[in-house]
Length: 195
Image (cartoon, rainbow, N blue to C red):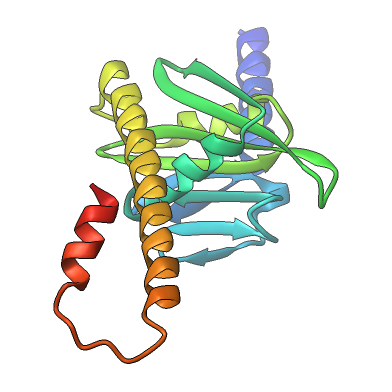
C-alpha cells in the first residue's frame, strides 16, 4: 500500500513539474500550452508573438492565408507533411540569412481555422508537438486540409500573375499616357493586355 501511495505521489509530482514548464496563451479564441521560455510575448488580434516572427509566434492565418502560406511556400527550402497526434500538418522550413538560422512554419487545422507556429529550427520537437496537441480538435479531414493548402497556393500564384500583369499595364499606361488623356479606351487597353 505504501508503494502505491509513493508511486501516486511521484506521478503527481512529475505531472506538476511538467505542467509548470508550459503556460497558456489564447489566440483567436483557441487556447494553446506553450513552453515557458516563450511565455513573455504579446497577444495581438489573431496572433501571439514572442520577440518576432522568426523567434516564436502562433498565428491564426485565416484572414491572410494566401499571402502567408503562398509567400512562405514560394521561398521554402523544405516542405514536409506530418501527422501530429492524428492531426494533419505541413512544415515549411527555410534558411533566414539575416539571423543565419533555419526558421520553420508549421501549418495545422484547429476547428475550422488554420494556424501557423513560427519558430527557429528545422524539425518538430516535443515542445512544438505539445503546442499542437494542446489545441482543440479540428473537424477538418486530412484531404480537406491539404486541399485547402493546395487551393491557397494556386490562389497565391494567380495573384502573383495578376499583380505582374497589372504592373506591366501600369508601366505601359504611365509611359504612353504622359500627357493628359481623357479617352475612355483605358479599360479596353487593360482588357487586351491582360487577356
